[in-house]
Image 1 (tube, one colour):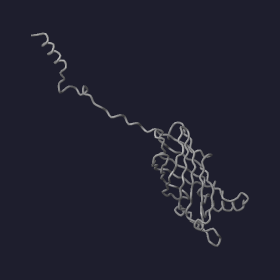
Image 2 (cartoon, one colour):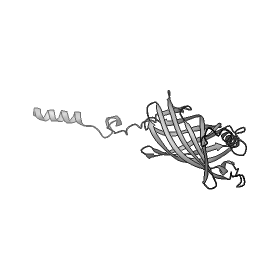
Image 3 (cartoon, helix red, strand yellow):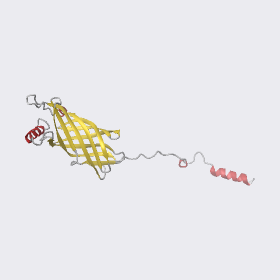
Length: 221
């Protein structure tokens, strides 16, 4: 038999792979691994954060305004996407201050603040704090997001939500602002006043949040 024929038979025998060959010889393409979320935690800077309030009377023909301090809070976020996921903000209702009156009107400012702190309004002796728990965040793209959750105030828990603008999301600092309105009657703040005493109060309270948070080392709890 010619040498060339012998060589072809040998090569064919070596390269032949039977149909029942072990499966590890067959190539397969695996899907790429799914990247795990990177949880982060930012604690609200209570010295740099503030909530401004505005209440009207006589259908908006009169108004008062002031501030509330943030007692504590935290925001959980995805570090990979730089997006807030959930969190809470707790307000110190005892810190309520009136800012729309001139400083010279000391007595009028004091009387209005005392009335708002009393049982007619926020009843801070019984309910010294209010808390917004963020359960869901929907990011619209850019720096806009919708925050929805529950507002616990004056012993009443009701759904609450608003649009927020995230101005900066830096490696160690987050800054966000938002505007919201609420119907105080939904939280049992039922005082209406009287036209005779010139203090007939509207139901809507306007809020402006200016929140600064600092990233906590170690990620989310």
